[in-house]
Image 1 (cartoon, rainbow, N blue to C red):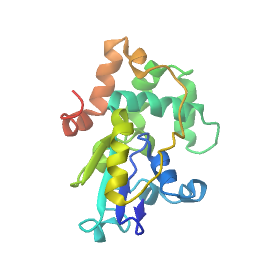
Image 2 (image 1 turned 180 degrees about the horizontal axis):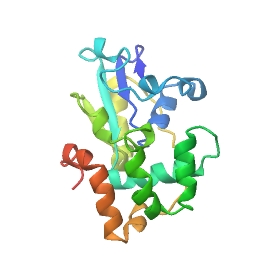
Image 3 (image 1 turned 45 degrees about the vertical axis):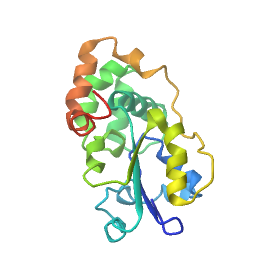
Length: 193
């Protein structure tokens, strides 16, 4: 998302509070998310971002990759649309099991669907600010002060599931997610061990 009014660029990493931020900036989410992936989930090098990157306040939000995998699974599994037929078929074949998803679906689609892409895909640039989902309530006022925005951050697009740690009782499941998102753990090691 680029806001010329606020002279900022927000890079929306999937399942990292992006729609909440976009709504706070006043975007019409239904219209905005009809854009191609390179626009709505563009990297710092996509779309029109490069020409403004040096002059605008740039920020993104990251999330613990283990928590993000749980959120992506439950969000995508709970959607009943017909898009992404192969992914949907694979998701429904899990029977709602996160463990089966991690074994059979995540490795297959981690590079095909933006909801499952590693966060490192978006992190190959210098940002002015990197917020974390886990500390977003504390980070949001800093972002607002940097761009001259005065609005509370809504919480939209919430997926319904237990706390993410409950899905990693089997260490093998955790190791599989860590393997798929190895680049995230490498890039985000200062935030997540």
